[in-house]
Each structure stands twice: as structure tokens, then as C-alpha cells.
Image (cartoon, one colour):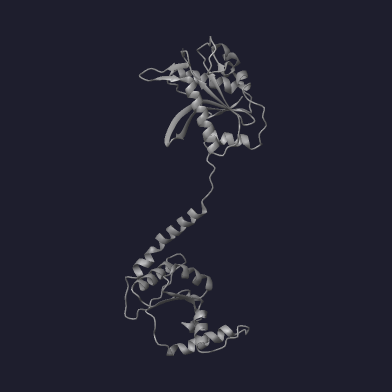
Length: 333
């Protein structure tokens, strides 16, 4: 028994044609081997000259090698004209040229498969006329690609005879089945996820940056103690940007180099972003001190010299932000 997709057939047919399609689906499901897949009532869409076109595939059979057979079922009476077979559905302009419909379905499917980078598999067509008997040759339809009322008992054999024996790669069939199952091959977009995390973190942390700037007191010294992710960095950036807009002299000092390098990329260009040890080194070198970085206590002496001398410094900044204060020695603060 072949696999049917979707597994639930039409349970509430609306027309006589729907009943016939359900009967043919049942015949194929029971009569084809278990390594075949049968899809039914598949909506399709394609683009042509900027316009989107829609349609429906009655039945699609996929062979064990991944080759495809499109089956168009036309139940009820069929009109034979001198040029083609025509199905009349009633109403104005409701006559459909069956040959044109099949060719459009075939070309649209091939185009969609090519654009989807799917493997080159054979795509055949079969016209099934369960209520009509062909009495004459028709140029548009090879007789071995038409199953009429007299051929219905051998429908499954006719379907099996349409498939070529061309070998395909082991993964081809699954790609074809996924295509008709409308399964999307998707992977997470890491950059989007990162952007969402940054946006969410910014929104959650915005409170600290909003209310701290509304507080004022005479000393203008603020100590912010808050957990990671609470918005301390966002607050610092807001203060630095405001200072730059007002042409104020501002400096950001932290303890570790990676954080300073990160903030330097975000802060205004006019703002000095540095580490505490870099401040101490710059001051020592301005004093003409030759620092021996091979000495084990170089950082300790460099820091102590700066702390001892800072009492004599003349204030030169409008804004000073000290980050990671928990990592500084108490004597430095």
C-alpha cells in the first residue's frame, strides 16, 4: 500500500468530480507498492512576468527513485473538439482546454523545481478520464499517457509503466518528497537572534538610564550598585553622549582592557575611554618615569605613585565615569 499525503483523504466531497478523485486516490493507495508516495489536492503557485498564478494538482505520484508523475483527473463528460479535449464546468468562460492545463502544470512545476535547486528528476504526466472513452487519436495526448474508462482496471499498472528506471542519488527522493510536503529547510539566523537579544536587553535596561539622569545633588557624585544586565553600561553611554553633545570634557575609566575596547567602539569619538592602569602609565610617562614592565611590582608602584600625586591634580573634566569599581583597590578610590 502506497503512502498517502495528506493521510486523510477528502472526507466531504462537494461534487461528483471530488468523489471520483477520492476513488482514484483509493485505487492508487491500495494498488501501488509501499515504496511509492501519493500526494493529492496540492495547491501550487508560480510567478510569470511579475504576476502570481495559482492552481491545484489533482494527484502526484513519486517513485522509489524520486521521479514524478502528475495525474490530472477529469471526471464526467469530456467534449472532443478538432484540436483538443475540453472540460466544461458551467457558467461563462468555464470551458478548460485540458491539454493547455496539463502543459501549464508541467512547465510551472519544472520551473519551481529549477528555482528550488532540486535535482533533475523525470516529471511525467497522465490524464485520467474515468467516465469517458477515447474513440480517436488526439495529437496533444499520446494514448499511453491517457487512462480512460476502459483502462481503469489497469490504472496502477499504467502508472508504474510511466516511470523511467534512471538511477538517482540516495538523497534525491527525500528532497522531492519534502518539496511536495511543503517542508521548509530553515536554520536559525544567528545575527537576528543577537539583534533581538541586544534589543531586549536595551529595553529591559532602559529604566536605570532614564531615572538616574533625573536625580541631582550638590556633590554630583553618584555611586551605582546594580546587577549585571541592569543597564549600568547603557547609563554610562547615555551620559557620555549627552556630555559630547554639550561640548563637555568626558572620560570613561574601567579596570579591564576588553571592556574599554568595547566601550570605545560605542562612545562618542570626543570621549576618552581608557583603563585605570593606562591612566597611571600615561601620567608616569608624562613625568619622565621609565617603567620597567619586567619588574614584578611595576603595576603596584605605578598605581601608588599616581594615587599619591592625584591630590595635587587640577580638575580638568566635566564628567568622569568609573566602571567596575569593585575591582579597584580601596585606596585608589
